[in-house]
Image (cartoon, one colour):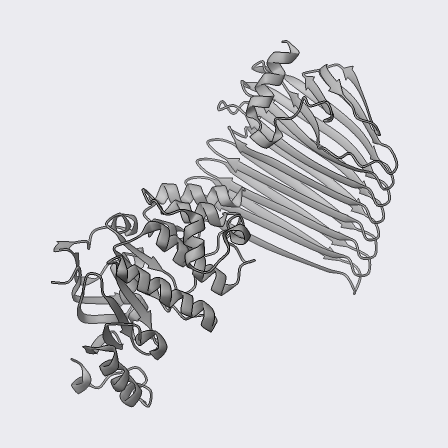
Length: 311
Length: 243
């Protein structure tokens, strides 16, 4: 596997606006299985990637006060049909620093691939960390994805993560994120997944609002078709004055799919406030009939509504 | 013969009769109003004409240009050129206005920018917003009207055009309705508003699922003001009032 072939696969899978991975002023890290195929850094960003058996141990540090202007691209994946890839990440975003990471996880030929991520992320005071993880899977459904992260958000820091898997079959996904948010800190976690055939989706996200005026939002938008089985467990705890949080889970269920949502909201301070909403089931009939009254078939209308939910 | 005919239609929802022996002809390129108090069956008539699933199991027939559409589902009626704008338009999380407008524009030469301009919404402000709860009821109503303009239907049913919108937005809706008429679209306004009724060329007064009277807008306004507004029959017409 050459760098060029793997990179080419990834770049072709990206939206046009993100195809600047190889620009000189754009940092990137390309990892195929346990090989670092390419790395390019920018001032203020330190990335050390050490191969381990079946994976890579990555240490990321953004220096104090450094604002990385362009998104950093991290490309993980495996082109073969079978294998195991472990990505262990330890990231520290120092005080007043900011970074946006676009992670592209590509397993186009997977028949039996396991992709494990185990991350510890620490945002120091007033740091910003935005992590967008986009998966491209093939149509064989043979991927097991297990991303785990513990995130520590210090005072005034902001953590935002988005997980998107809407092309190809999910396979088996088991997300486990847990965050701890201090005073005026913000945690915003979003998952958008389109399950089809025999996909299995499990999301377990927890956010602890521990600091005064901390804020947290957990959002899960899932579409389940065919025989997909999806379970979403969102937990939000608020133990400080003026902590504010919201849990939002929407799951569209079609055909023989099954969906479950278990939102847990817990408040342990009289001046804290958290809310939750969950909507599971078929496509809303008025949405459907409006689009059908414009001439779309039921299938076309359903697909458009799902694409909107996952947008 | 009208382009759209409702022929002796009766409909029950559960045990309740909502339409009873209703017959109306709608004329090609004309503006019609179906008027009546709340609960008269006006919206049910619109839904039956559009073929919404709960409203298709009716007696009698609905006919476009001489052919029955009774067995056709909503999308097939739409592809014959009929469409409906709801009293309270649907919201779509994440679906962009531009995508929503294009959804029904099969073969239309009109652009989304033109359609938004025509309903008085700035394209650069609205085009890439989602059709969701961040839009006001009036904005969603105008976006729904823009989607109708994209579709360019031959028969347009609009349920309560003035519901939830301010006067300037209503004026814009009237302008669009006039423009649709110029394009020979058959417009059917479902309303209990005399202001809306005044824009119609033909009016039909309903009460308790029945047709009470029909004629010019002036005639029905006179009847409505003198008989319906002071009426204490709780939406139950007297037998002698049924036309």
